Image (cartoon, rainbow, N blue to C red):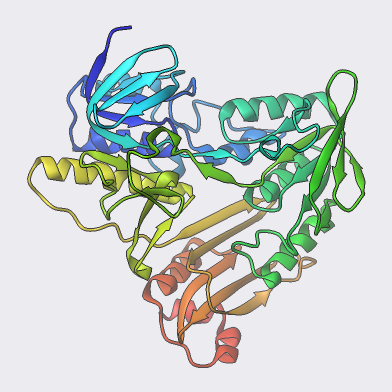
Amino acid sequence: MAEKHFKYVILGGGVAAGYAAREFARLGVNPGELAVISKEAVAPYERPALSKGYLFPQGAARLPGFHVCVGSGGERLPPEWYTQQGIELVLSTEIVKADIASKSLTSASGGIFTYDVLIVATGSTVIKLSDFGVEGANANNIFYLREIDDADKLVAAIQAKKNGKAVIVGGGYIGLELSAVLKLNDIDVTMVYPEPWCMPRLFTSGIAAFYEGFYANKGIKIVKGTVAVGFDSDSKGDVTAVKLKDGRILDADIVVVGVGGRPLTTLVKGQLVEEKGGIKTDAFFETSVPGVYAVGDVATFPLKLYNELRRVEHVDHARKSAEQAVKAIKAKEGGQTIEEYDYLPFFYSRAFDLSWQFYGDNVGDTVLFGDNNPESPKPKFGTYWVKDGKVVGAFLESGTPEENKAIAKVARDQPPVEDLEQLKNEGLAFASKI
């Protein structure tokens, strides 16, 4: 294959790639200057839809409906948009070698792409149980959810195993969202996770108790404090049961595993400085090599608000870091400067008729307020995190847009607080007066 040269190459085809392409178009890019190289067969899309609307039994989300940038209220960018902008969308193309010194990328089919400026937007890959040698982990109908192909296979299994049994391995984002959506599909659901409560990286025990109670009321069974150590399958290779470390065996027609991800940095290993599991960048997402940028899940960047380096796996940061990198690239070309990235960590989730948002940092003492009774017809509650006499984080379930803005402002401004009991009594009123 002939070598192809581009002024700018975005390596990866996820959320960050799509938002970076839009920012290039907004700031001005000439036809033929920019390529987006993705191993997926479709143009960049809003990945969170895969664990939510894509799996709904009725009115399911489908492409082209959730191409970027609809997830943030922006315009939808279907494949023809890239053509109209003169952006080359190189799909179904896996890059197997990156030579940063020679500014070249080599695909699995032998194609070579060279560039002047590179944005690494490779995202994360899922951690698989087969990576740990778990017995039977390669059986049919054991699913991981990362890309649209994974979601399509899961949809087919849900349709084939109507009223069947599913075991969800993991109690984080994927575990909670997939348990809910499988239940909506009339599947019998059991969640299994080793931690004492769900979403332990973010949730306090008080927050988690609400969601565990709510899920139990929906008929979802929860098994805590143990892990899957093996899988049984039938003569066709289809999974039939999950073997747990505590000796229990759970019947299963479908298994979904959500035990975390790893940033995809293998291509640039030893060529770019890494820290905290990601590619180290400055506040403009430029790496240790000038002209090479890293955004989204793979970037370890200066989190100005807390004066520390962090790597953040979330769609909000993927979008914003991509835009910041492109702004920085274009500013440098014009001899200008832009402001440093000043990110407020933000996480959210939706399941059943629930919807929560979290802003800031989940460190320090916690104050739970509101009605977190899972039996309540309209539960509404939140939590503040207080460190060194300041509110540094805030969580809210079932907040209005105005209330969510208020807790974001609290997390950003970090107002002082002296009396935790008073903070508990004030609850949301504390946020609304900041």
